[in-house]
Amino acid sequence: MSDKLDEVDPIEQSYLLEVSSPGAERPFKTARDFEKAMGEYVMAKLYKAVNGKKTVEGILEGYDGETVTILTDEDKREIYRLKDISKINRIIKL
Image (tube, rainbow, N blue to C red; front, side, top):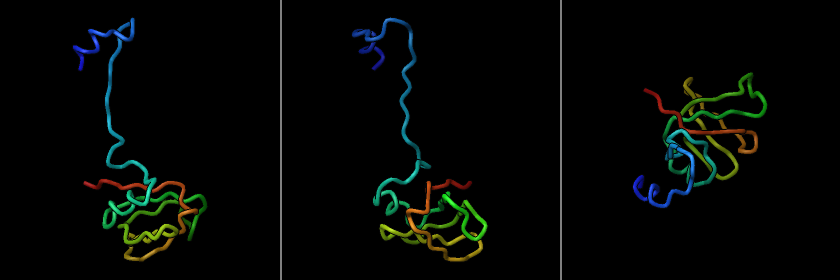
């Protein structure tokens, strides 16, 4: 690709072209994102604290379009309304 860009030379000054993907930990946006992450470890950030917590981590166990079910590290199943979640994404734990 570098050779083709040099031929066309769309930018006069020197530049560095960087290509990247959104990554494995990108926030979920669609139902498909939730479906693909079922059984995976996730982190959900809430708009307001629920039971004293604004962040919840655990295994994604359910999604029905309106709610998300997470099995927390304390082995508690917690259900959150999607509209109460500001961001949810997969977390890679090593």
